Length: 297
Image (cartoon, rainbow, N blue to C red; front, side):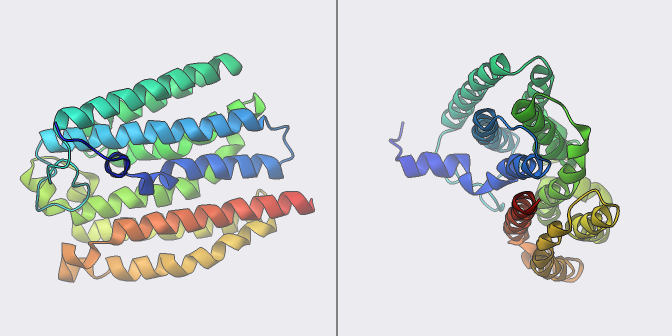
């Protein structure tokens, strides 16, 4: 068995993907601050750290399954920890199980500090992590990601931070969640050829190239219209217009994906990474808008 450096292990868990899971928690805490809720910051930070560990467990679990089912190969895009021989499959499997165990223990600790509703949310999150690979192979990956990285963390953060499940937080879960799902959709649109070779089905494959392009455009543009509509309805503060500068890279991404039907997968080779950067920028601006609105209220 090879000796691995800390850098190797960090590459294995893909920390650059963590904003996809952590940003919904951060945005929710900022939203609660604007709403002048009595926030338990210890629980909030605990939830933030725990979802990152869950995410790391999910990344390695997914990589293991993709490798075993020949979804990932030397000529595919994405994670190379197994296909390039950096790690043995049993090492990634063991790492995934260890991370999942840490996340579950930490989750039980947070459950002890809060209450039973967190148990149901936690079971949902754990199920999403474990069932993601087989569901992804049946075109349900987008739904799982929206649940795991939008609805569940938003509701869970609200509950552990305030002691109450406030369904109004779903107003902010939708825009962040859609851009997060767009990361996966960009990846799956690019990988349609190699995924077909592996005999799996993704939403992008079911839709086809052109329809997938339109879905991606909707996922990255609709959040801006959603926020504008909520501002007009008085649901969100005017300060949330601070997210609008993120529309510039969103339009840039739309221009990139529009080249896919004509030029193929090479035209969108880096679109998933570009979308991840968009999600981070959008979420940070969204967070800032609530902090500013809260300070000035």
